[in-house]
Length: 371
Image 1 (spheres, rainbow, N blue to C red):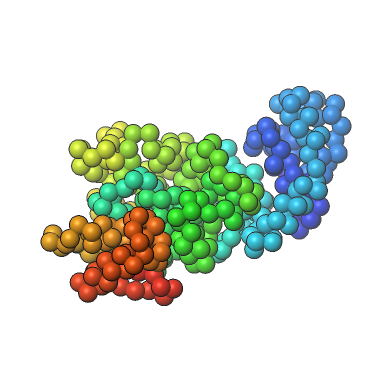
Image 2: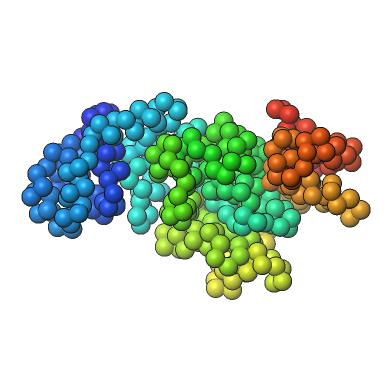
């Protein structure tokens, strides 16, 4: 039971301070709220009272006594400074589907179109080291989701995540990027253009404070939010041990559906996805497989979301075209990915333009031409 209003700034600051307290977690936080009535009440509670709450350990009580409402206020101000909002579970804009999952986030920081967090969504995840087949399959999955009115959710990593976000926006849809670090920190750095685009045309969300650097443990925890926001999770390429499989585990724990795109049995990046199908995941073979999870049926079918590359395409041009399957990028960013000089990269892009395979976009960016 909440005994304070969402617009009470002092209580919000105290809540944030408690949420940042190490060792609490969702279960202990709930016990604390029930016993203390309000965040400010918890911060002012005597140590003996805290220790008397069942489930509150000595270490947890010590940490709560050390928490400072001023630290919560500074965090709220930091979020506001970068144009972000802080969402607490009882706020109307907090995504209802995340209140229901095991180990729900105690708070979220979001930028962009926050309303997207409450929309019907499909999660698309997969290998960081994807193949051209994986990129093409991802385009097909994302296009079907967008045409069915779903928001595409992924983790803003390189590889399939980046393809999913870029294609969703290229197809006229919307996307939510779930970060494993704080807002305002671009990781990986190569995704700067994508980060800025998602921030402008979609939404970014994190349970970590603004400015917090990426840490190894944060990414597996981030994955439960990706699946938690979505009605279903689609895996496009995943090797053994892939982080995408952690997202699948979270989805199954949350009672959400999992689909997987089958791949060649000889491909390392297909082992995880094929294994999911063997173990009972729904194979994703066509747009129809996604329809029951979409707000509305796709209005039209797309035979291919990316052009088939000509067999006679020179190797250097093919490499550029395959890199552009991840979405639109500027010449400098493309050159960095390819390890080439910008002038050489532009020459290859020009050759692909002349072939009708690449088209320029606003902001001096380029993308593959989609039929």
